[in-house]
Amino acid sequence: MTDSISALTVARFLQENPDFFGEHAELFAALTVPHPNDTRAISLGERQILTLRDRQKELEQRLAILSHQANFNQDVASKLNHWCAQLLTVSDPQSIPGHIVGGLIKSFEMPEVVLKLWDVALPDGPFTDDVDEEAKAFAVGLTTPYCGPNKALGVARWCKQSPASLAIIPIVREGQAIGLLLLASPESDRFTSDMGTTFLESIGQLASAAIERLPKAD
Image 1 (cartoon, one colour):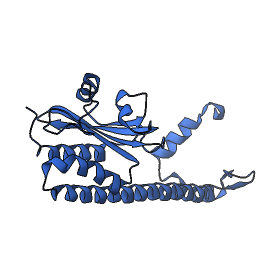
Image 2 (cartoon, helix red, strand yellow; image 1 turned 30 degrees about the vertical axis):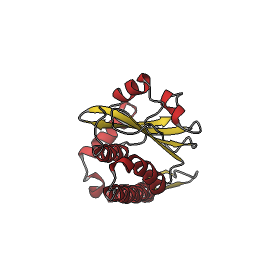
Image 3 (cartoon, rainbow, N blue to C red; image 1 turned 180 degrees about the vertical axis):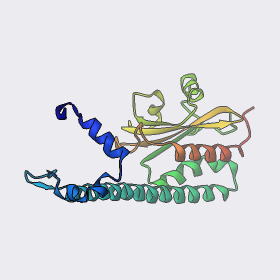
Image 4 (cartoon, helix red, strand yellow; image 1 turned 60 degrees about the vertical axis):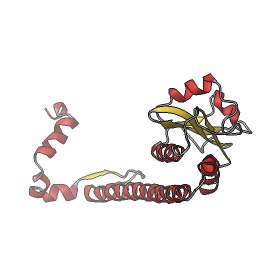
């Protein structure tokens, strides 16, 4: 009959009877279990302490990761706020594209930032040239920022050097894509597909709002 009692049955019994060891304290003290990292046996109480210590270490590691991420997010938010404040001080709308690019390079220490616009009243130059229908179609299909490796993306040709990873953010006016903002890096882990895009979306919204000051192209 003893052989027919499974470990699951014993575990279920102990879960349903939490006072069992309290009522049988002598049994609890006498029980021994294998040490998790040794060949010797230890009491059930010692094993429980070791388990609690392992859980404490795991929680401390999780807390350290959360703290690091919180500090990172705070730093990015501060840089984003500074970049936005600088954009608000721009008096000449025609210089806004340059301030968007230069501010991002300086604030976020980006190796290269590229901005291309269309349907906007700007003179021919680095912000309007080399824009074809393929790039416009890509922008239309980009409902959220792209973040990850350079998978031979056509718009990556705008970069001076082929990036290992990049973020591509649509610039939108009245629900229509009118540009693309590229943050490019030679480091493959600078932008990865598993990264969140919340800050990238904020950059896109702020840049789009700034571009609103530029009149539409005739």
